[in-house]
Amino acid sequence: MRVSLEDFEASCLQCQRCDLAQERKTVVVSRGNPSARLMVIGEAPGADEDAQGRPFVGRSGRLLDACLAEVGLDQADDTYICNLIKCRPPGNRRPTPAELMACRPWLDRQILEVDPEILFILGATATASLLQCRTPISRLRGQWTEWEGRSVMPSFHPSYLLRNPSRDPGKPRSLFMADLTHVKRALNGVVSGLSPDSSDP
Image 1 (tube, one colour):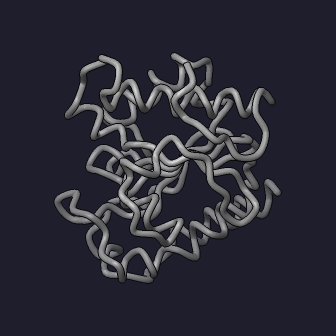
Image 2: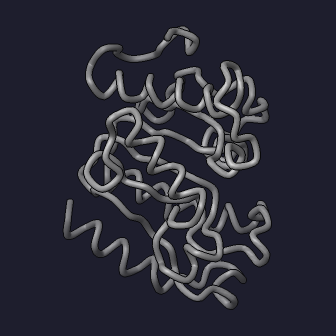
Image 3: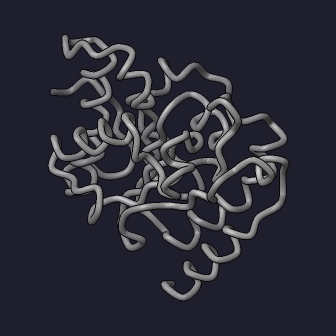
């Protein structure tokens, strides 16, 4: 698997499938453990990620790492972190449908090569694109679903939590931590398959 994943990354770095290749500084492939049972999937690289060549290294990434640590997950050992698309959209805008389509084969291969048990999807764009659905993230988050034989937990994007920092019950930060706690429990074998309820303490 390791050789195959290294070949994938080398190919990805040469990608010219869409116009984003003309403006990027780097191709942002991944960070974390390629043997992890948990894959975290965001939307797209931002300015910090484009500069450093690693996903989730700016404010959102620091918050994500803190949240992972809070439930006992190490971002370097327990997770493999990537994005839907590997190049930064100008001005951090949302990826266009054409850009998502052009980059989707890279994500599909990435999932195949890493072969995680659980996908933790961050944000409305990533969730809608991966699951091919239009259901609002506010209704999907916290609910286990299946995709290609894998358990999937959608949740909010960390950037949304930065805009809504309250830790009060029922607020986005609290809901995100509940979702992440369910992921942690699933990795520990406390639950199996689909979880019927995301509201348990």
